[in-house]
Amino acid sequence: MSRLFLGNNGHKEAVQLAKLDQTRMPLFKALVDYVKEEVMPFHTPGHKQGKGAPAGFFDFIGLNALAVDLTEITELDDLHEPRGVIKEAQELAADLYGADRSFFLINGTTGGIYAMILTVCGPGDKIIVPRNAHRSVVGGIILSGGVPVFVEPVIDEELGIVMGVTYDAVEQALRSHPDAQAVLLLNPTYYGVATNIKEIVELVHQYDIPVLVDEAHGPHLHFCDALPMSALAAGADMCAQSTHKILGAMSQCSLLHVRAGRINIQRLKAMLRLVQTTSPNYLLLASLDAARAQMAAEGPRLIQKTVALARTIRKQINEIPGLVCFGEEKLNRPGMYSMDPTKVTVTVKGIGLSGSEVEYLLRHKYKIQVELADLYNVLFIISLGDGLREARTLVGA
Image (cartoon, rainbow, N blue to C red; front, side, top):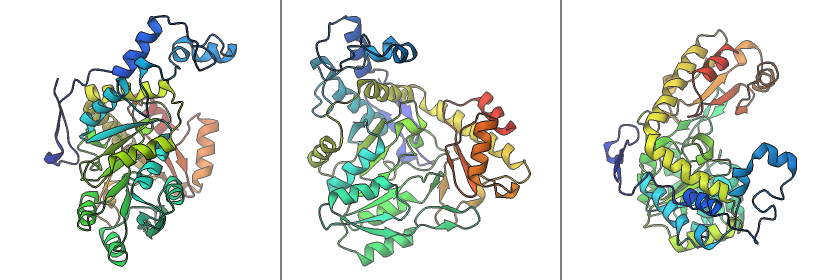
């Protein structure tokens, strides 16, 4: 079965034709089939498909969720040596995203970043990273014994937030450290800001070293032209995406995508075995399989709808005196080549409150929980789970 997928940011070269039957959910189906067979389990976990679960917990969570909390048995495959349904599910993810290989992550993008850095860095090896990198990047460098070369991102003094790194800053780092083993980028930042990643990837590849991308906040970029270019479309060698942050997978669920060539796949697999549990939660793994199928079937429509909703929210918030929701007016300034409109950052200093104070007010008066609050801003993430009701409630607060 073939399905046409949109590329990123108007780049027609990113248009991808999926070759596999993307309607299939091999791992999820195997779990359901196992439960229907009514096998009597004499294996872990100890609650035995919910029969031994605490009563209150069972009543709230439900039988189905606990019934598929299973372990590595033959028909359910093994995350660390996949030969069956997990292998098929990962191949479907790679096919959808246009990667050479894709791997399921069940301890979040943090685990993926650890594995990416451990794959390309050893003790004493230099890796160029933005100063505003997530703490998992620092953790990965510590674990590898590598040496960070920090690149300063642009800071927007008006908003009080960090933007992206520039081409010139990365070029200077490469010239000053020609022995660097890799470059790691963010795409986009927590606030939805993206640099010209394609241009920087091409620069780094002139030095014949790999580009790793922390794309935790960009699992949806592949599906809509109105969003920044995805790491894979830009030619990056590896990227880790938090499928749970924006798409329909459960918390802790991420994907790691790889392009062969500059990456030692066997070493990467060894590093993934090192940083991931030997007892993976099959409910999480199945949610990755299902989220991939959902995006294959409806991804462009769902993300386009989400973008349109976010733009409406932005427009209406900007009409409220004292509030500012930055957007396309800041494009093409240093550190901001493009942006993700679904990350709605509201600057609140104009109403005489801090971001933390607004967060508290929204939570306890209006029962709205923000994603992030800093000194000047609050951040709302708009996703495929939001609709007009949520938009009206948010703007009305």
